[in-house]
Length: 116
Image 1 (cartoon, rainbow, N blue to C red):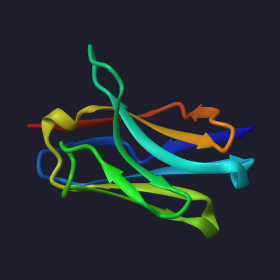
Image 2 (tube, rainbow, N blue to C red):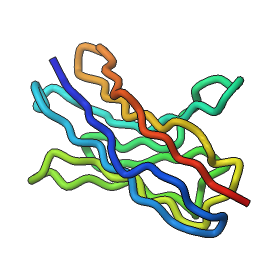
Image 3 (spheres, one colour):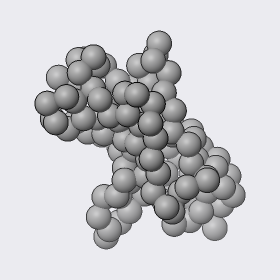
Image 4 (cartoon, helix red, strand yellow):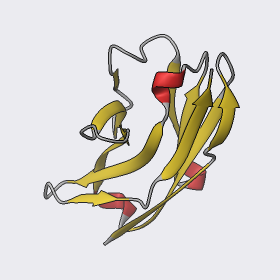
């Protein structure tokens, strides 16, 4: 089992920054990929950024160049640094982990609200 706890969400003005954290616990040795997803009201959940166990990263086109995903292995934590935030970035952000057996785990989510 893997447990994920997100934090760092909040209210910020357009152009501002936030850093989300995803604390990972449990069978962390089995994880081969962690991603950040978001879901805005009335929309489908979408991938924002992902990082593999080998350190490879990928980003949605809409956040490329503004968001950065990273991890701190010593703390079993994955971060999402979000800069130049836009109102359309407003959503609940979820941390997602996938293990070698392709089981997927989700955190409870953290709200990000960007005001104009």
